[in-house]
Image (cartoon, rainbow, N blue to C red):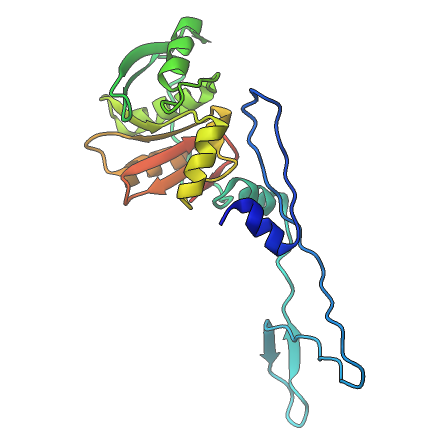
Length: 250
């Protein structure tokens, strides 16, 4: 059944669309309507539903126990942000932050899982990003399904490079997914529940990667220690998701 049909059955629908050519994700937002059932004449109105969050506390002998009813968890900017982007907003990682190399040239050797293309490039040195190297990375990390590309977030490359340094890894990085056009992401979301409709991949600041020969849990651990963005752990599929969105993990 199509999304439109499902929304028609539910009785409410809301959608946001983007201008042509925009890489801003399309977001469908549902609304919940209050429904009141009418009571037939002469019939008793149904009693209001009781909250299931009930806790009894001890009381003095001869008195009734005190019943405390739980309340909904208070929404905070962190929980709202975690819901918006998927995953959970974490506390600070345990232990001291890793010592980062902020002076050495930063190079990446990449292999595309989808196209089998390879790229080795030094994208940063002497305190600056190199425009020609960033252009090569933008093309390499394009949507292989429709060849669309965007300006990737250079900070994403830093997250990847620092993760390698923490692990002491100097080999090639296998890239399973990087930039996704809205069309490709919508198709993936329709066939997989694990794909967010407003995925960070559409913003050019996410990559799904693996380091051949390195257990994915170690990649996750190193990336989370950076506390520089989102880290998704997919052990069954054998890859880790990195992005420069809000700090969170799943």
